[in-house]
Length: 193
Image 1: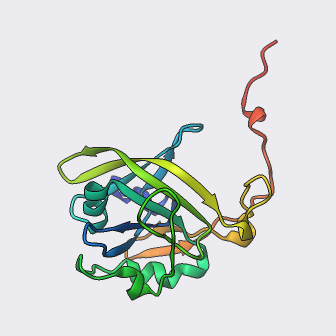
Image 2 (image 1 turned 90 degrees about the vertical axis):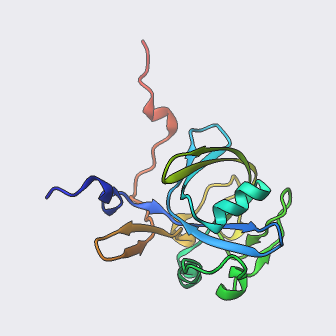
């Protein structure tokens, strides 16, 4: 079956995060995001794609700060509440019953109960006609001790990070599972003789 090219999210699972920001007047915003990815290891930057008209994008532009919160499956209902199109003067933390978590190096709060929190500062915005690409520098990354080993690896079976696959009529939420094989990074390099 051939699909139209814009339906790539029908076949490509995407992570789901909640991006928390503050407006210049102090209104808390929390928005779900699927179009986000780290920019190459070992760099400390991430990139997200945004429609031009979003309160989250406005807040990032105006303050230069945002938190990427990684929600577990147990926060699905809160994610759905935050996906609604509220006016900019509505505190989405209150609407969704989210508990703010003080950030350490930036002003916007994170969200309690998340698997991890990335406190970010805007590095660059790449503006196109219909969308913007936002590059952020991760200034501080913290993992919830409940889901992390002593060296910072995530136990995905207990964390169950939220992800999604789009369909023709809506979104199917899911989470990754361990495929049963571990591959050290060294396995990816061809040994030279």
